[in-house]
Amino acid sequence: MKLIILLISAGLWSLHCSGQTDSPGSNTTDSLGTDATDSAAEKSTLTLGATYCNNADYYGQKAVENIPYFAASATYRFRSGIYFSGLAYRLLKDSINIVSAENLRGGFDFKISKRVSVDISYSHTFYPSYSPLLQASNPDNISATLTYENFLSSKLTGDYAFGKTTDFFVTAGTGKQINLGHFTQKDIITITPALAVTAGTQRFYQTYLIEKKLQDSLLGIILPPLTGPQTTEVSQTVTTTQFSLLSYNLNIPLAYNRAGYMIEINYQLSLLSNKAASGPGQLNSFFSASFYYQF
Image (cartoon, rainbow, N blue to C red):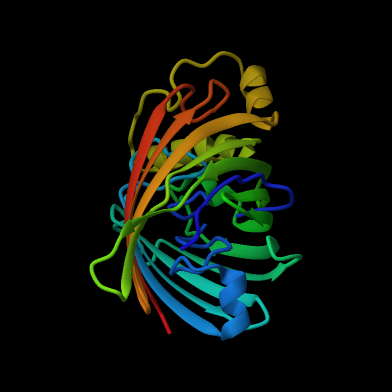
């Protein structure tokens, strides 16, 4: 299983429970945790997954209201490293839509050397009108990731999100996979603590506030200011358009792996910086449980 490690975004971008991440398990590791570039050289694979998350995470940030959801995913990866994936979200508080969002992604990962690999992808997410998700204003994402594997696995990732607005994100992180043992000779239990730091712009948040207030007014809901005391429109615009530190994130995924499937639970703790428009200095926590089966 792959250890998530130093992430620095050096190219262009993408919801997962995930930040950032868009889809659960949509990194350069396949959903069963094996190195994607190594498994790609052996055979083509189809991976199906299901995830529950207690709240939607966007680079450690969350919406005004909690958004728990279920997600179902499918990824087909060719031996060449080309892959395609689809993801459907069902927000548990959504009383209007059966499917609350759908994401389609295509990408290519390849090795530069024994320890260095690159992943480039593009994704588009279909959001309904007045989606409560923070990133709904930027449905298109281009991402590029450079990964270095050693004692730690180090990543450099650049995310570019665009649509109604345009945002760029950079993430840096480090972590280590630890083998906790096994029940039989055919399984393995791992824990992969990882630290990450994210910086970026926040134009998406201005659009989110505008659409949130419009939706509430249509529903006849009168709410207090969504982001607490405000200063001037000029100061908030500067905050959301500047490239600045957004969050510090700790992930602790615990996984049970067998040859064909993986069960994983993950706890994420995110401390927002004083530059985060969604809640400066706020501490957010996220919990998810996932199951993946690979053919």
